[in-house]
Length: 402
Image (cartoon, rainbow, N blue to C red):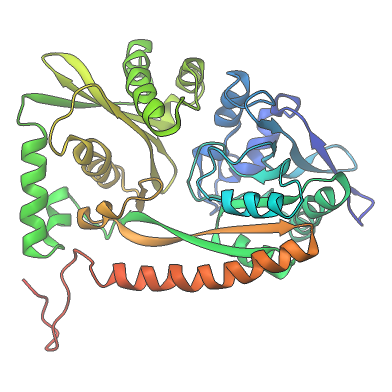
């Protein structure tokens, strides 16, 4: 799988076969190298990925068979890795290719199995080419990129999909011949705010009033909100949240992707990287939102409730996240997939990136044409959304609108 004899690239069928320190040294190198400027991402951590596998939420039986790609030197030191899964469906990905699958199968092809380089059930931007910093980093990354495509070509899978990439990775995969795709999410950016009120001052007057009203009404029924993180997280908190999560999962997907054990495992293994928002009425939890804490980003993931109150979803998922990010000095909040309603709450349209290797030449050409049109549509949609930003604009005299 590689031209350099001193670098070996191979597949690993479970993350447990890799040492945690070795994986994290590639996935989040700043944990071992204080001067490293690569942001720490909780979803890339050994703790998170091993919890998915150890709980059985990710397995061949659930359609996510681990096939992690690893690069090692002659001494067996891990130099790089790709979180990779062999899949027999397209669920839990949030970059939608169902229409591709149907078209290919109507033409007589087999779209599944396919290879997915991603974090299961997690539409959050992050590195997918997890290369340890060093003089050979460029060669290791190129080797991993080529090996992923080579595996697809040689093993009979239809395609390889790198999803929610960083933009530089996306560009490098494009130069290597992968087909490029864009979509968008809504992210909140911290412009050096000292408080939520500072943030409100950056909005147009009408939007400021709207957000203040929503925050008041969200807790008007005597609702109390607490954020649990680190040692304050308990199994009782997870019991409550899992009830909310399963209710949402049953309504959205027919079944929840994550099982109860997964939440206990992340609570044991990475509690300091979790911010669990729980909403209480009469001392009883009625709603919750799960967030993960990176070195510069708060990632909003799951929400659920057993009681419906006006604007409580916005409060728990968006406004509490902004409060938390400001308090922690985080640069951004990623609030998950979809949701144009986030725009009015100060979350701006932001491009997301994926790259795709299609093995069948004719199908590849058709997908390439489709993606060229889709990228233009995504850009136009983003331009239109940007024009409806809730932030104060500047008039022709250079003065901000009130």
